[in-house]
Length: 256
Image (cartoon, rainbow, N blue to C red; front, side):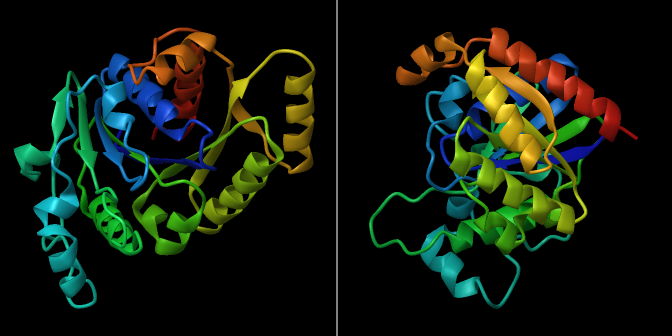
């Protein structure tokens, strides 16, 4: 199987956490996993993988934001038609077991301008990355749905939308679902941080009213929140096991 999977949703719903859990689940299923951190704001994904520092970003490798802006409207950022993981410079990737982490770029200073350049690089990278057999690309997108407008999902096979127990989160998930379907992508919804009892039942009812069917429900896991406060790697406990079960279910559907 060779798949490119985007993980999206409203800010704070746990996209990066899910990207980490999905990567670990696929690694345990003997896949080679490439994780693209395409969120220009959130800086914590590399810490989940216990990396001391993030690899050099693709934006930096391409000459930095200033040089990038000069080229933005004239030539492709990634000049080759196709690239493989092996062709990506060593300083732009960090390998942990079967997982390779790559960053598009981050906003570091005030007045840097909009994040559109990161979207262009992410879009080209996703489209031009040629996967080998048993390689899967996981893309941790920026918060919200703007990346759909930038065309980041054009080269994606499957979209996984993450939502939490909040009205705004479900609204964003519903719109993301609509946009993914318009792009003719396989799309799945995962509900995250869901406690037992009345909240769970009300959330399921709200999702049904939006005509969305969750592929999985990830329970609220206090241990995950505790280590998140400390910036540590999340434990592979009950939340992870729910993600793993959900991903195995999705793979049975999307695998050729």
